[in-house]
Each structure stands twice: as C-alpha cells, then as structure tokens.
Length: 245
Image (cartoon, rainbow, N blue to C red):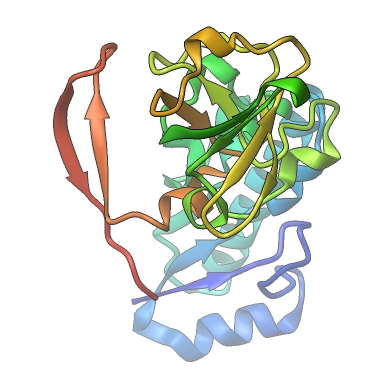
C-alpha cells in the first residue's frame, strides 16, 4: 500500500495536487493506493499562533481536496495524512483528516517554545550533564555536554530568544541559573554563560544539571534509550529508541 505525497506549500517534497501527475500516480498505483499525505514544514517559519493556524488550515484543506480529487477519478483514498507539530498544536479543524503525524509534539523543545507550539515548562526531554570546570571571573561553567550530546542545531538563533546550543537547568529541571545557555560547543564540551551572576557555590565540579535542547529530535538521535523520571530524580523506567537509517 502506498500514499502519494503532495506539496501543501512547504516546497520540500511532494507533487502538485492540482497537476495531472498527481492523478496519474494514483491511477498507476491502482489497488495499492492508500491515500495522500503532506507535511506543513513551512509552519516552522511562523512566529505567532495566528500564522500557524492559517498554515494548519492550508495543510488540511489541501490534503482533503487532493483526496476528493482522487475519489472523483474513481480511485480509493482511505487515508488523508497530515502533520507537523505546530499545526497539530493549533489546528482549528481536522475535518476530513484521518491521520496526524506530529514528531516533536511528544517532547517539545526550545524552538517549539519560541514559536508557541509549547512552553519551556512543557519540554519533556533534557540531557543530563555534569559541571567539569568553572571560570568564575568570566561567569561561565564548562559541561561535559558538547556537540555529540546536544547536536549542533541552532534553530533558536532565528528567534527572539536565542538559547545557544541549549538551556541549562538545575537537576530538578528548573531555570535556576537565569538565562543560562550553552554558548559554545566542541565535540565533548559545552561552555555555558548566563545573563545573571551564576551561583558558583551551587555549581561545583561534579554537580549535575540538565540541558533542554533546541531540537529534541536531533538531540535524542544520539542516544539508544530514554531514562524516565516522573516529577522527581528517581529513574522509574527506561524506553528503548529505534535508531539507525
């Protein structure tokens, strides 16, 4: 069974749902045709909820209209699949849609918070790191979380609140160190700075902190499992990841 990918405005992939090729592909698939899918990747360019709502409706209406076009041609179209995290969060209608495929929706991240798909407090995945060095005179700390631990995603750099390579939280996930961000990374190290004086009496070498990521998907891809906590510090479960390409 196969879905035909259509372009709903992102311009990344998919065929024009109004073009001849779209119906030709559906016809060629015959009994293998399952339906249509699309992805509103251009929702990530939005910076306010109203913009996301407009893209969500564009995504929905394009997919539903494409499905109706296939049906009008005598073809089966059981699945109408859409999905991006911003549009999932703010869609006002999903009429005619049978499937949503949001990815980072389950975790959230700093970039999603900046485009109002979640709040920073909603972010459900962080990287556990340790303080391994301090420069008190420069108001910065060195962590054992560099590019391999966090990724080099800099998506928040295009928003009004640049979080560097990640936001440093205390061990309980609280923003206890001001706007403390990973300003620079090498392979294994991250240098964190803050807009307030860091409490170095609480940030001795060996102290554990948590780092909220810019892009949860890229960060999580570096690990083979999740260590699950439920409002505390005790690991209550582990979830294996499916990795590899």
